[in-house]
Image (tube, rainbow, N blue to C red; front, side, top):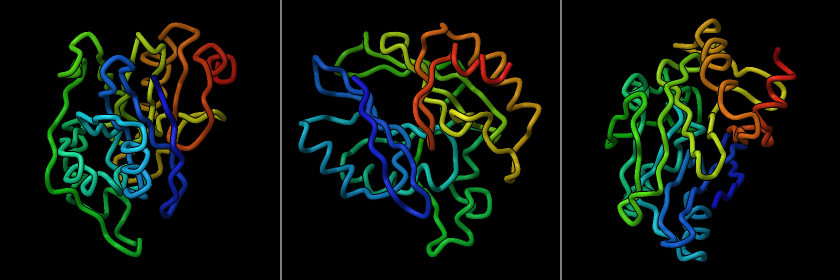
Length: 207
């Protein structure tokens, strides 16, 4: 079960919940802002969040992560290539915001890693390293839910941005072509700042 929640910080951003309907346990993906709102949604639905997963290291995707990690007793995970973004406001783009932002406690992910639920080992996500927006940008792919959480790798209208520190246009294009557009055509792509779109539709717009 996937649920989307739009949160508003400096930017509006899509936060996602991926929940196992049998155990009501699951993952929280990219909690960008409004930790109280996110916590209320979790509590209202009776969900247990086992892990907080970040698609990349920009502050608008992790602004609520530290507070929620403590409140929910759920560790934060990010790809190892974006680990330095967690402690560097210049890299995570919060240096010029009202509150420069750092995350002190987190665990690192690797490419092709399988993330499973303790409550249900058959419920899992695959980590696909999709660099370009940042060096450690990842896509979380759920074959069971037929969905991929792509962060800012791409949007409904086209490729993501690469004009931030660590961005690389060639890497981003290769990530999209080689790792996203090769997913099953009916896979739903869920991004950080636009509406869902299928792989088939995205392919028709880009190629």
